[in-house]
Image (cartoon, rainbow, N blue to C red; front, side, top):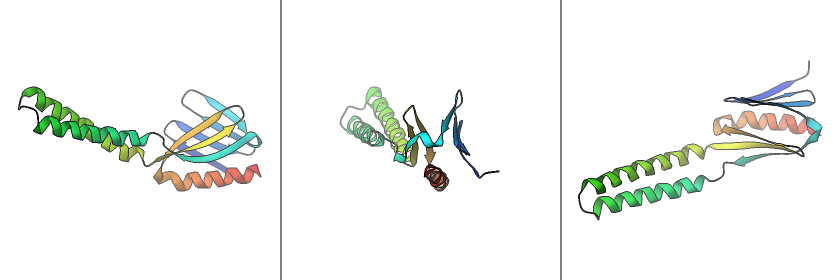
Length: 135
């Protein structure tokens, strides 16, 4: 039996077996012949910097409403809500910055597989095996 390689993340799974690459999502299964793959790349998650900008804006609005507005229930609630929103966006910036995406492109469809930095070694090994099969 030939060497078999696979990746799994949540409900997504990519299995390489022989000349077929099988992509399984929660509602669909796609089979791709390995020779039809055009490119394989690992990309960073896009749009993360906007979370950092929203976090900064939340902290600034919180400071403005806390110090410069009159002490009322409205200004206090605006300060607390904007501080919580800033913390959420700040946390999501650091959480999402550890994720990358494996993109496998063919002429017919593109497969994207998100993974964390903890699984980078496994994804790189899978990518090397897939590139060897392409040659």
